[in-house]
Length: 383
Picture 1 (cartoon, rainbow, N blue to C red):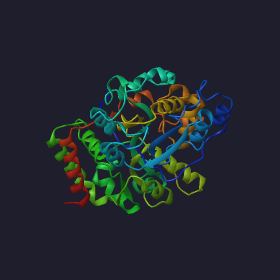
Picture 2 (picture 1 turned 90 degrees about the horizontal axis):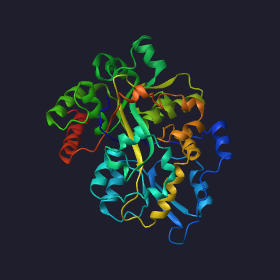
Picture 3 (picture 1 turned 180 degrees about the vertical axis):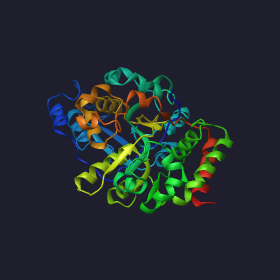
Picture 4 (picture 1 turned 120 degrees about the horizontal axis):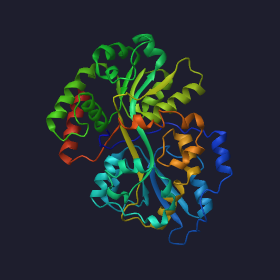
């Protein structure tokens, strides 16, 4: 049974051009979207704010060519940065891409305009089961359209870890991360943890058998006690550098995001490194999160924003994005255009059985957010 909880997303360190022949041929032979109208003067431009390196190389240029709309594309590296801009008002953006735990609070605060679904025929391609999960942060799916979804799990340098723990170590268990007997051995080759309180506490709560979306302050104190036991073995806290650290062999274990670890694996292969990187989702369950497109309430180019959202949900367009960033889309028709090695990779596209064990990070009340922030600081500093 899926626990409903929602949040975070990834920062990419470098762009990859991993669009295989199958994706290229599918895109080249297809009309990317139907009879797109040329932009009128009012909507001849579009201001987009998205995560760093979270798009295919030709996504923007093809949209501009087909619509006549000029895009101003800015990037951010944390939900807090985006949240600050939205809360001050008049951000100047027409499309933003928050993660659902933040987006849910932002929607409740009235920061987003409802979608005009008559302008979004490509919504028909979205997976109803995944949209039902997103509805926990956006009742009725009135404001959000998913950009991509990912999971939080364990990234391994298999060569190093198996040498230290032995070839029969159960790497698909959270025990590897939460039991000092394992962590103490792996410290010598480097351990990184996401600097993300919502991710860390949700997994710790889950490991303790508590609700990952608990609103009981005492549960967070229990989770802190668990986290403090492994604190001496964590060599770095970051939400981006661990990708390069995996590639460089500077760490052997990362509590991280699926797409980052998959990119690290690809870069390791391309660099012909003498070790193997793999991403593992612990079988007991793990966080899943969506980054979603939304239109700020004060957006000046709402018609162009709808054109962009519909364009992104063109199956071939979204397939090219997945082939580049290793993050799955909720677009069921896109999968046929995704490189087969990515489409069949359960680290990118988890099985239906695995999805049933996932929990989504959902919007939490302010007092729990403040508590997590305070306890996370205590955890990181060790006192």
